[in-house]
Amino acid sequence: MNTNKFRGTTVALVTPFNDDLSLDEASLKALVEWQIQQGTDVILAAGTTGEAATLSMEEHEHLMELICGQVAGRVPVICGAGSNCTREALFLTRCAEGYGADAILSVGPYYNKPTQEGFYRHFREIADSTELPIMIYNVPGRTGSNISAETTLRLAEIPNIIAIKEASGNISQISEIIRNRPEDFLVLSGDDSLALPLMSLGSDGVVSVAANQVPGQLKQMVSAAFAGDWEKAREIHFKLFPLMEANFVESNPIPVKTALVLMGRLKDNFRLPMTRASEKTRAKMTEILKELELV
Picture 1 (cartoon, rainbow, N blue to C red):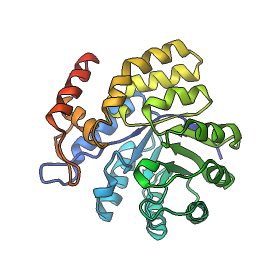
Picture 2: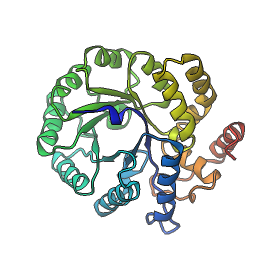
Picture 3: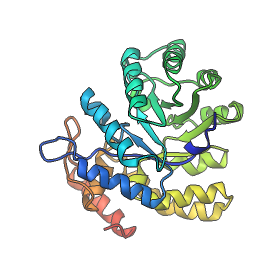
């Protein structure tokens, strides 16, 4: 399976809401167009940054349909289709197939804390149910349990499990995966601040929060690293590093959506339990955006 089209910068797209907390379809479509214009390689719909946890099943499906329809094949679309219930993950995977997704992102089951064998069987069952490429998402800070390097490498032998978004922050674990992976298995950073360090080890790009705010600059950083221009890549990394860090001073996606509000790209609306940013966070984000000449 050719996995090259999933290398580079993937934006973990936010989900805008109207004042009544319904999906803000107009802002969403505008964000998609801006991402494509700025050169983002791949768009991820309904991930953590897209607040999938607060979407109804019908809204989750509609979000997939909207984004796949708006992109219309211009760049690959990955749809978040994970769940801590394997049967629900299978259902969402079928939905993603039906709406024309190019791949799915499937998070490690959260809350129920599977064994490593449980992780393996969960993802294998999903893989057996679809011909879509699957990107596993390991984010222990959100799920409460870690997918080990050994389990990831075991899953990498399944033909349509083609990548992992690694957000464990464990450089040793990620190094082991990169060192021992099959040739066509991709490793993407799930942390913006680790994207460049991991690319120096041979990883394949980033699934990015900051790409919501600075898509063109993230693309330039990743492209420079692929080209071996480490000086330019480091320059961009250090320029954007304060933004990368500020995006997590409160729970994601509160800071990044607040930045987009300040940039005039969406309304300041969140669904509980997400809340509007504190004044301290808003002030910090305003300062950083001014430094980057984004406001």
